[in-house]
Length: 201
Image (tube, rainbow, N blue to C red; front, side, top):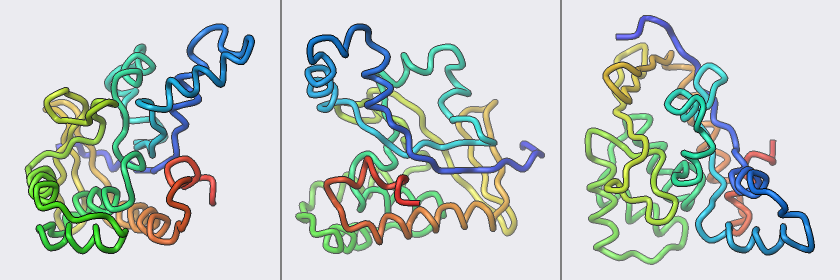
């Protein structure tokens, strides 16, 4: 197990702007607007995981992060507030049940579909959680980055591969996640949530 104590920071990442800026000649003759409309459908902004001030996906694809983000997207801050609440619960090792999910859907005024509840229970009660997934379907079968979280009295542990593990001090780790949870719960602008969440500081 990694003996170094790492730091975790959650930061807004403007993935749509990155995707647009990566292409050439987009600002010519209204190309930005055209390309923006095309990118918007399957390219999402999200909240990125920074480990010791470095984006997590950079640790996998040092020279090809942009290529990775053309196919995959971070799931935190990307889907909906109830989904973020579930990620937070998973990261803090809080119990997740079907009733937990139904209550979150009610809280955020989302329809309750039992098949969806079943799929969410399955996703969030496995040993591993997908945190970067396919930007089209966000299905585990398409690959991405997943991790396993464990904890003891003093630390939280992330295991992404056999060779890539992180250890976080409990107090700082919980403070970061609880601060994010507060932002999720106090943001009343559903339509701007994904793009404005971390600009409200």
